Image 1 (cartoon, rainbow, N blue to C red):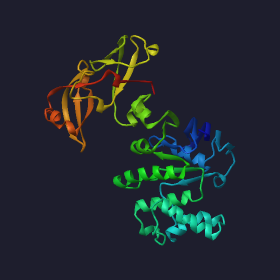
Image 2 (cartoon, rainbow, N blue to C red):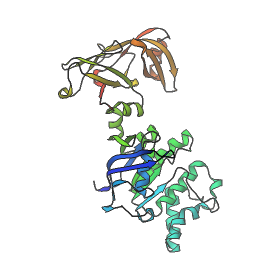
Image 3 (cartoon, rainbow, N blue to C red):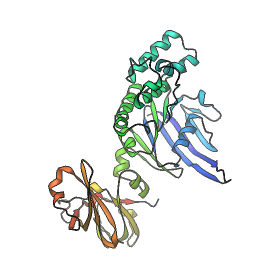
Image 4 (cartoon, rainbow, N blue to C red):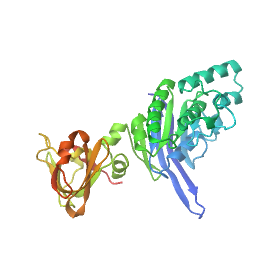
Length: 367
């Protein structure tokens, strides 16, 4: 697939009011393909918005390169770059109606009136706002305002659309609906989207590729399934979904790896790279809460964790069971509501077994 954006060794530091400096981007390199939906995911202050602003031209890198559509962007101002941005605040003009908000970019460039009106109509239809042309922003809901901002950004037909947490002001139900609509609009437009969020659900729902960032660095790149199923380090495993972590030493290296942990449990792992395993080496492994089960099957009957139930929390479609194991360590298991009969047998204070498949554990790299 053609490389639309190439970022090579991007570095950016900011001075603080106290006279110090902080690193926003630390040797960041990545590529974005044509028609790809990329999400920059990470906690506040990880560098994702700085990277987005650097692509758009609102920030200049201290060093490194940004190449868009085979053109180096150094000293190219934002208004000359083939990108548009949808901001978190929407930044709509409150005194003009929806039609003129959307058509503003075409008016500035002197687009002929007939073409301008046709493109505004097409864009209104694309974002589902036909019939809203004469409304002012104050007469729109949050979701409708978000669509106007999106329409205004895409009407100039940029090669890349940058979105800086545009759904953060919406309520949960509307936010989930807009996630799907954004992906559908991106498919219809056939352009690249680079989306910034700290919400893992948004990243997993919409993305072709997720870029996980922390402390100005990229810590993992992959599809949503790759990121979720195979986190490379503790940060990713913890930030994307929930995980239980166990630290211990490698005891026996065979087809199934045996690990003795600091919480007095022994765990067994399958599907690991034996070339990277050394006996007595300290190791950290993770397993998702939904992979710890109340019932065994042919793959799990020999593998379990004995624990004491501390708390049971109803989550709507799931139950979360908090259990204590050795050294007062608390682990989580998530059980589907369809297994309510098994959950009803769990009482706070009772001893239970949580079964696991040895293939469900992941060996993590040091952060």
